[in-house]
Amino acid sequence: MFEEKPQSLQQRVTDLAAEALQSGQPATWFEPLYQQAQGDTGQVPWAKLEPHPYLQEWLEVEAIQGKGQSVLVIGCGLGDDAELLAKLGFKVTAFDVAPTAIAWCQQRFPNSSVDYQVADLFKLPQSWQQRFDLVVEIRDIQALPLSVRTDVIKAVASPVAVAGTLFIVTRIRDHGTIPDGPPWPLSDQELAQLHELGLKEHDRVQFTVSEQPEVRQVRLVYQRITA
Ligand SMILES: C[S@@+](CC[C@H](N)C(=O)[O-])C[C@H]1O[C@@H](n2cnc3c(N)ncnc32)[C@H](O)[C@@H]1O
Image 1 (cartoon, protein in one colour):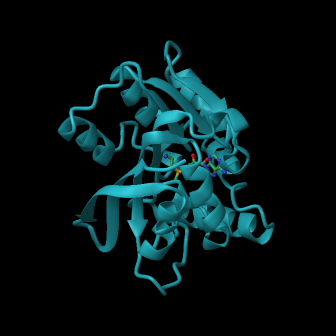
Image 2 (cartoon, protein in one colour; image 1 turned 60 degrees about the horizontal axis):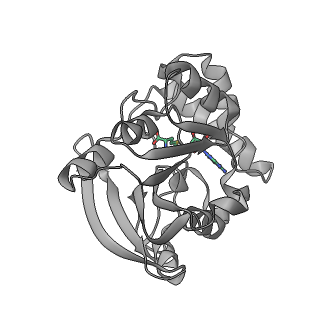
Image 3 (cartoon, rainbow, N blue to C red; image 1 turned 90 degrees about the horizontal axis):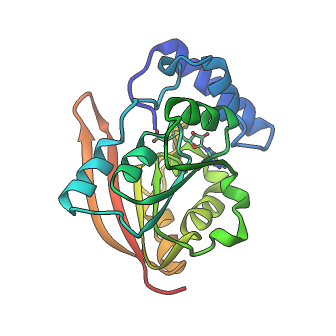
């Protein structure tokens, strides 16, 4: 989730996340962070103003075309991944729990075909259950603590249609280690929950970032085998 960033921003993220955790509502730190940024994307640690390179690479390598396909972008942030998918012809729904992020997307992309919505991953509309051909989640599971991990993974899997695809970008950690997040990388044992939910791992590519060799990131592709 967080690449390199100034110490003061890192501290603000840590403080906001700690406060949210203490309140027992771990997803409540995002809206204040977007609000406090006051339109300055430099104050949003994950904002790169371009689609995530691992998503771009996968779409190119697999020569994926979106015509006639629906995609749900989870925790869409400032909208760059959603916009890339729309350009490829997908019918895109993109949501975020932070209203300021969604307003920002609408302001950045006023002529977009993307259906941007404020929604909470923990309370997804019933009509989204197993409805999307492709579900894209980039750095969102790891943005929420281990205390809600089982629920988050269940929620991420739920909109994937039968025979549909789930695309994930996340940091990973060794099983048995307790991360000091945010971010809170995933373990293979946590990812195994997706198998129990009817999804099968289809592809995995691991990346390391030269400036942060201790960080392991993966691009994962799952397919829903059973309802
Ligand atoms: C680390 S950011 C990643 C944003 C984007 N996916 C990216 O890679 O640039 C995590 C995003 O998830 C959103 N988020 C966190 N909890 C959420 C929830 N319960 N429901 C929907 N979105 C959530 C945050 O507001 C934030 O935009």
